[in-house]
Picture 1 (cartoon, rainbow, N blue to C red):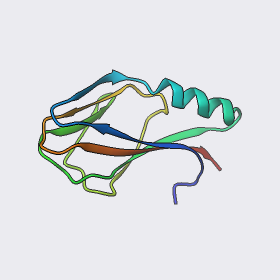
Picture 2 (cartoon, one colour):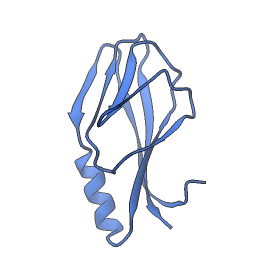
Picture 3 (cartoon, one colour):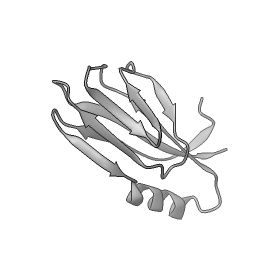
Picture 4 (cartoon, helix red, strand yellow):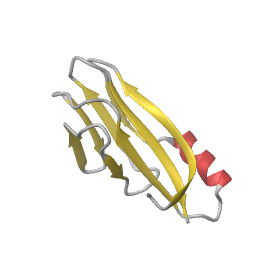
Length: 102
């Protein structure tokens, strides 16, 4: 339903009381560009843990907090700067997906 061929996916976790400092997922972006050299690439993430007060995920200027399980967000670019913070009482999990547009 996203209109892409699967390229790479992974799950990220930010533990209770932890912060994932602003970064770019260099290895995943490099691998995808290497294996899909002439394709337009699109990135998404899906919330796979329940919403918890204090757990937030930021992509560039956008902040996502209290999203429901199954909510999907399309990224501006596969190599967008992003970070996460978890001040809740449960680990925060996200499913990340990069696809090559059909």
